[in-house]
Amino acid sequence: MHAPLSQELTLAFERVTAAGDFILGDEVQRFEDAFAAYCGVEHCVGVSSGTAALTVALRSAGIGAGDEVVVPAHTYIASALGALNTGARPVFCDVDRATGLIDPAAAAAAITERTAAIMAVHLYGQPCDMRGLRALAADKGLLLLEDAAQAHGAVHDGRRAGGLGTVAAFSFYPSKNLGALGDGGAICTDDVVIAERARELRNLGQRGKGEHVVAGANERLDGMQAAFLSVKLPYLDGWNATRRALAERYRELLPADLELLTEAPGRECVFHLYPVRADDRDALAARLSAQGVQTGVHYHPSVPAQPPFAHLADGGDFPAAVAWAQEELSLPMGPSLTERDIARVAAACGA
Ligand SMILES: *Cc1c(COP(=O)(O)O)cnc(C)c1O
Image (tube, rainbow, N blue to C red):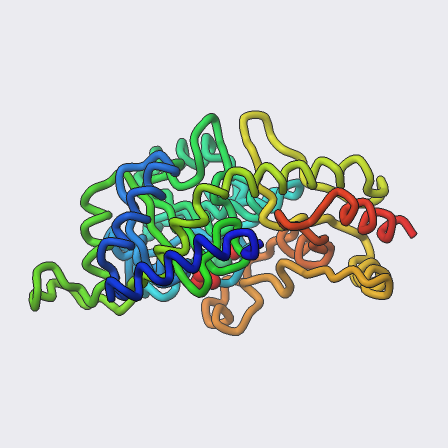
């Protein structure tokens, strides 16, 4: 993926090194402006990771100790840790059986008088049901946060992820649809107050030089990663188009006993991963491995069952999330694969 970009990336490295602009600075500002425009929002604030983006986004909206954040029980653990790290309590809710995405009815049932926010995780690159979630958030006066770490470029009713709620968190972990050459993340929002607080929080709470107005952390995006991201951003739509074409090929070729994702009308998935569900997931993984096909599991065990969340003792039961954790297998997916690779994987699934 990076080989065709090596000249552009080398030039970016040389430019940043010559300028000595290693922390925040012009390169970060330049990328923030470009990514805000890409997402169709007013403000982008670069931070050090997707997990930091979630925490800073919630804290910037005033959420912390004493608050509850509704989080889907089927997601990457960072979604729930991002909420936990603010001091708030993540409250899990079940997901939709077909998509694995947060179910607005289950989210509504998880709301209490302490609930301050709902986290919409666009898992696998699929946009959540934002109409349902926006109606719920508006009705209850809650913040609607997008965890868009797997959904750079995903579309919902003509708008891109990042501009579908009040505030959004992105990760630029190298394997994401848009990845840095190291860690990185960003917050996107149209809310100027949230954006200004996020700029302070990511930088030790600093407003003016030497003036620290809040107990922030060091969660800055560095100039080198911003410069690399500026090189890669113009390629994102092409990479996503390749992912979507490969997903279409899988749909044509995979055996009928596997359950695949289907796109809801008005929503474009960017297939960060290609999850299938199989009754005997582990046997399928072993069969593929024996034929030289590497697969992944995203995610098992489910988040509420992991030790950092045990003390919350929800005692909730999340049948759809548990089924996803047991049945999901991620087949190879990425912009450097070819249709021949997909045909080979599909044949191995049927063998
Ligand atoms: C990757 C990811 C994160 C965390 O991003 P990092 O940059 O690794 O901290 C959060 N949520 C989801 C859904 C992710 O996939």
